[in-house]
Amino acid sequence: NAGVTQTPKFQVLKTGQSMTLQCAQDMNHNSMYWYRQDPGMGLRLIYYSASEGTTDKGEVPNGYNVSRLNKREFSLRLESAAPSQTSVYFCASSRQWETQYFGPGTRLLVL
Amino acid sequence: ILNVEQSPQSLHVQEGDSTNFTCSFPSSNFYALHWYRWETAKSPEALFVMTLNGDEKKKGRISATLNTKEGYSYLYIKGSQPEDSATYLCAFSNFGNEKLTFGTGTRLTIIP
Image 1 (tube, rainbow over the protein chains, first blue to last red):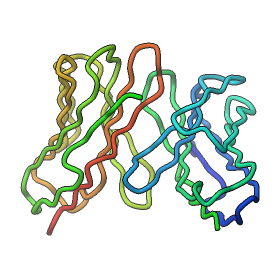
Image 2 (tube, chains in turn red, purple; image 1 turned 180 degrees about the horizontal axis):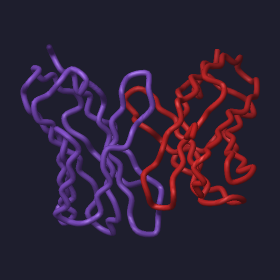
Image 3 (cartoon, rainbow over the protein chains, first blue to last red; image 1 turned 90 degrees about the vertical axis):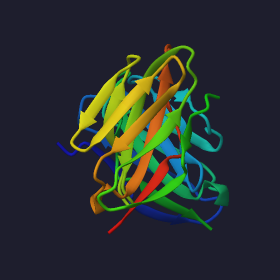
């Protein structure tokens, strides 16, 4: 089992460009999450999905959209990147209410 | 927004010494408290999930306790080793909400 995978590992964008971060899990988990990690701020939830076809906002959703394409995949889209979105992005998945398993992270730099 | 606080923010411990740190969380409507270990340049890995007041969990030299009435959990490391150097995160969830709220972590450095 690969667990949770994320692509790309690293990306540089110019302000205003768009991109999609991909996440997939092979653990048959219903719940999936997108977090961002910034120095001194810990992990903050951007969006989550409790099941295929449902998504919900987290603590910091502005500037992002998500798609739960199927049970395995949950993507995060930046429509118009801003320097404030420079961060490390983590995807996670879990069975409902249980331990979350994290992907390796995507390091994003917006110039 | 639920507030999860961890202390201290950072800690340097001599190899072989034991140490502990704290996570405090809202005590009302509690469901579960999670501890994660996060090594630099890696992703967080689960250590424990605790749900009952008085719960104690142990994995090797690491253990954790939970007090849901007063809203705190302690993580203990016995006989620290260099490989214990990491950031330790706690995260809280309450009934009706499976989302986790994370603390900012305790960064532990073991001095050989």
